Image (cartoon, rainbow, N blue to C red; front, side, top):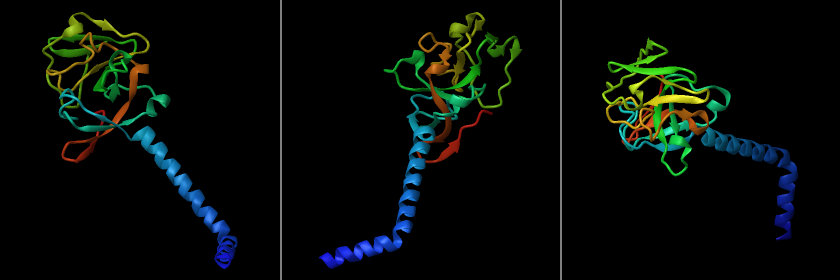
Length: 190
């Protein structure tokens, strides 16, 4: 037994630097993996068909939590948030349409921002229900106006239950969708 212990110490002395190098590399890799998953791999399950065709009911969306610490949300970003910051609510996934300080209007089913028609390159459904957009709506300095892409079947900023989304209520930016058949695609702004 003592011989085995002595042999083990000899091996450790002979290969100590190499062993420590491997332990360090494994530790750094595990730390990197943890940080990556924590900030870029948070999962949210999509409830409802508000973002169809980008994401359907039951799809899983991966969220980048760190991007909005460095950058402001942009028009067209798909975000996850809790309405009115309600921690008891599930996360909503919607697209940013209006930015702080802008005035949003709905004229004959079309969205206007600061009196200019919004040109959208992503697929959406027409707006039939105007909700809070019966009159022009001006956003405060920290508020965003969000809509789902499936605008017929939607709870979004037009609804008083959701309202304007404050930046502090945003969980992060959606960047990857994994559908119920385990296929995935990147979520893009355009």
